[in-house]
Image (cartoon, rainbow, N blue to C red; front, side):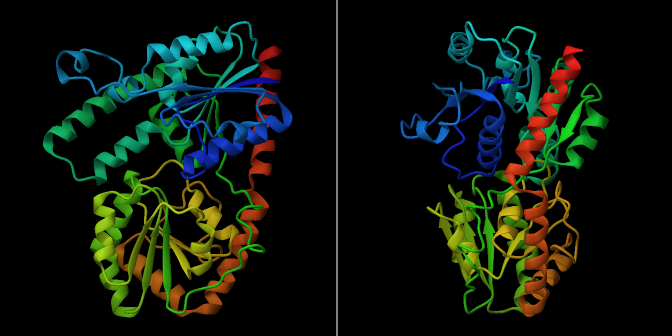
Length: 402
């Protein structure tokens, strides 16, 4: 097959969960098919091209978000959601038309709803498939429920959600398939966007050759050390950490007074940086390699309350043999069972209790490390998931051709 891949960013270096997903799936698809890659590029870094040598053709189109539209008259009378307009650019549209001129594709694979405005410019014929690192309608709805917002912010978000529902349904009716990260996303779409009839669940994975326990065996710090790893300007991560320090940590300190916490990830917002003032808490910001931090940690915590999207920190952690304590939402989309592959806790009491339990019991840590790693290597490597996605696309093309 000849595939055109469209991304709203250059997914490299691999310092965000979404970048891991889209980059590794692109690389795996290129093992079986001819791939052309078109990316919006906000950074303008000239050093990335060699990372995409698997593609036949690569184009990074310079991009800057337009200003957020004014409420009157630009926003209120426009049926397109503001979060979609924020990705609109006539220069990108023209560059894409030039890139595909004279080409014929079997499938157009584009990442996330914001790129439909560009994918829809491609003449009908090839499969149109949206790969969703998250379902925007679900994600924005959960943000509305959990984030502290002013009355004006809340009203504007509700207005955007109403428009987004209509937009989702319009787009879904023109797609051949949607690919989502987990079954919860599929269930949500079946309820809210019934037009999305062909939905494929493809979980997130891990590059087991990079996140290798053989190369980076556990070397835990002397004191009980908890890791939280992820982009620190991403609202679900910030919300999860805020909940942990507001509601969970005081309960944990009563049982593990010498606990240490490593917060590792790029672009920590001021609220995240402030956590470093707490006893035993380190905020690193971006690091060149996260693997040594996994080595040092006794456990990784995933205190997420906003669902949808990637859960790469869990599979990466388990691939390296670092056990995990998560909320149920945090572990969505992964066939990992409580008490067998990881520990789950949703209330503050339960989450603190599970962390204390695993920090106090080395045998439990070792057992969950071994079983969790075995499950990840059996089901969640990018090689396996890429082969599954390739087979799925071949089936869709065959069905469309008959």
